[in-house]
Length: 255
Image (tube, rainbow, N blue to C red; front, side, top):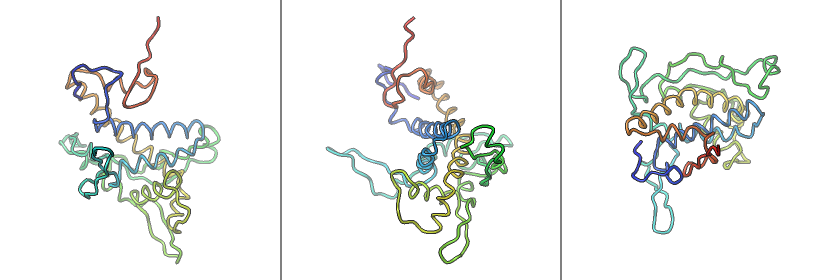
């Protein structure tokens, strides 16, 4: 990450650093999962789905600054996912070949399985995700992961079909609570919404496990390239008063 001349920890803005944006979105998912696990804060499940929509779907929009306001660009070529930030980054595959992340098999096959009731009673009783939901590690590419069937639905005529990961993300981000809550929904949408808890937890866990290590490594490698440690310091949230991405005020030891 390039550090501009006259860098000041209190003033440096990360807003134009794309990889920081993705890191922050992943951090929101990670923290939301912790709140659900430890405190039963299920109201953060829609928060997770909103972040997943930004990472995995093309419904994000670029904006350009006008003289008096920010104008939304309508050009469909500006459609993007936050995953695109990582997509061309090169990693080693299972046989040590260089491959772009978008083509690498880094995502797992998954199913929606809940923890056993007795297991829930022991600890984290509000958290349904179990590692048994991960059928096979590192077996799917980005597109394959999104296109795998996740939820069986039945329409109002009794016809059964499946909704894949991408369709579930869009339904839950746009229909199930939060800013996009809608009162009138279709039967097949309700079938997905009724599984909000297990879908949000499963997709949230998988996304953080797969992408957070890659995201952190890119940030730290950019630090090494430019001879600094801005990203490393930014990731140490406990060292700062606030979590504002635009301004991080260090906590100084008065001793």
